Image (cartoon, rainbow, N blue to C red):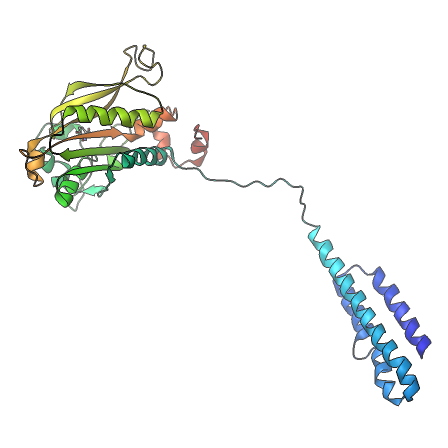
Length: 335
Ligand code: DAH
């Protein structure tokens, strides 16, 4: 019997060595260790043996069973490990990562700078009431300034805001004075589209109201904000302008970002780039929003964020920005 058991073990080990499929190993295991296996029969017949024989055969059978079990599980593990080699670890891994939209980046960068200067970021609805977009900003019905800001009038009596300036009024009414807020956002106009004009673009409004605020505060804030945004010292200058909601009103120019003021094709040899509208908040606007113009003064400005993004990332055609084409995003030099 001892010989038979040893032979059985030898055969089983020999057989399992040659197998390479999981199913075959499991079948082989059933053959040698299953209920109907020869080994099991030997184990059942132990009780019929004499005490001395039991002393020899008992340990031998148990040891054989253990060794075979180990051989089978080792083989199964070997096969399972081999399966993982089907995965080619040498293949290059290509992970497509997204990137932020240039306008999102510029808004984030500029509002971060403004937050450090003490501004609070506010927002208002894109579908705006005529009152906030025009009347409260000293632009009554039939005022010629409405012509330049023609927009989409909706059937619910509202309109798509033409600028971020309505946020000035909303903030003044909500928080009162003193106040230091900025409001980035999307604006809309009835516009013929070309490389420089789109019906949908972005602005960033800024406003400071306190006792004794003057034009020099406006110049200082604008110069600091633009220098930080473009990461270089810039000069600013004011030219007279007209906006119904500021008095006096200005057009703000910034020293050319390309030539630094010497004159180049970008600035049409003037050394200056036209940047944004600004001015001292009109007393009518302050009064309309519940702030006493004899006690408080303030300045406001409105940037074209879309233009800044185009300059910063050298984007030649404004229409790319609203195209939703991810390939175009990958082209910009965004660090
Ligand atoms: N809202 C004006 C526009 O879209 C820009 C502007 C001018 C904003 C003067 C201001 C400002 O806050 O004071 O054309």
